Length: 219
Image 1 (cartoon, rainbow, N blue to C red):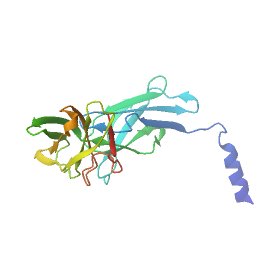
Image 2: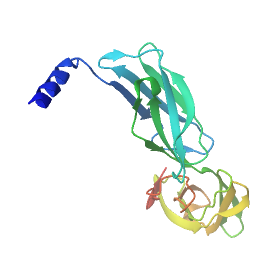
Image 3: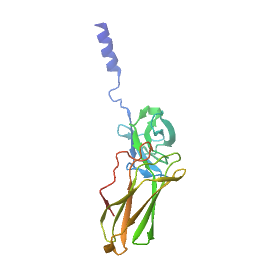
Image 4: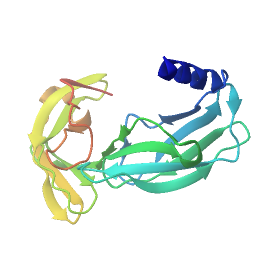
């Protein structure tokens, strides 16, 4: 009975209006960015309805393959309205979260995707043939193995089907190219539109593993 009474008195001593800090983080670039482009993140720190200005917030990250602990990547100070922001470039996919040390608050972690940066060129060959090359720029020590899909259609096409596929070949540290030679249909009269797509390479840590190339490319 004494134990029950003591517990009851302790509960009454707690302030009824107590509330924890509310820390939120939004990944503005949630669809991913190309290699060399920074991710953008924004968030708020509040207590109830009141913003918490002048408070330190850390951006913490855990790089692919996500086996190490989180490390502090950057620090921001909340503005008068409790908002804060980060702009950070990552070499590969990164798990990120926000932490407010003074309030002992942290957000759930989320994954920021970084894709290889593509650039495509073509060269006309004899016999209505076309050589298309896609160059891919990645972080150092990355290995790309997934084939690039090339799409071609006539000059006024709104969509195009897959015309060829080619495996990327390493041409330097963090540099790859995939090349395909195709023959243009005679009825196109040498005028065409083209596009390309590449899937996730297993073990690369660049891009979303679930991403797929479409059956038809939309221009």
